Image (cartoon, rainbow, N blue to C red):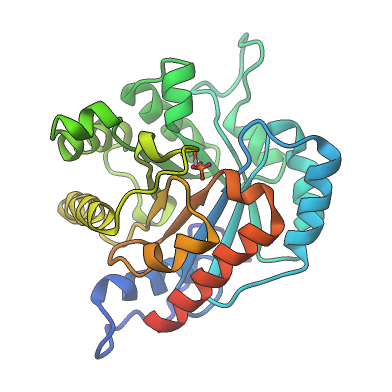
Length: 285
Ligand code: PGA
């Protein structure tokens, strides 16, 4: 079986008219064992919804698949096993929303990366701005969590993003670069890392960053990655992504997918975003 995170070697030769960046996505796609240029669309349910609704949503997700789109579901930890079972045999993976930096021990209420893996998770979301704000998580802690997750066999999706004050002060790129420096473990294997750029002011607010802002930040992140031999790492955008804005967002160079909060709680909306992802993947092929 091809493990998540493994590149199985399907051709990644740049083709005429296809930006080299997107040829990297073909490599990424290959780690899921499926051909084509990939757009990754992840559903971050946060602390929602009630279990009965979650089960119904998973059934709705399982009924669909989207060419060129890899879907990841980050459910609340207590639902992980059940969601994994419901999505088994589909092309939607499950992942954890967070993990502890230790492998085990006296940490009441916390969940170890190995436990997530045992429950079917293939990937873990780390450094989400809500964890940084609600739990005081800093970059160094995110990096130790990432190391723990990698040791447990999970891939990691690390979130970065500036606040409105930081953007208005003109320091958005510097803030995000510092978060990358501090949160991404040195020497990480590119095939085990995904990034999500989520401007804090756009999360759950209905305010989506403009395509120019997204393009500029994704280009800056891409440059940072290239310097570290991590150019093939996909950069997702997150923050009020909806069916109505997804085509424009996926049309931005260097946007490799979306991390979706609120809109992932309605199957119709999430499917609408995935359809936009499939259109983007087709356009890039
Ligand atoms: P949102 O959340 O889509 O509701 O803005 C995104 C996120 O926090 O991952």
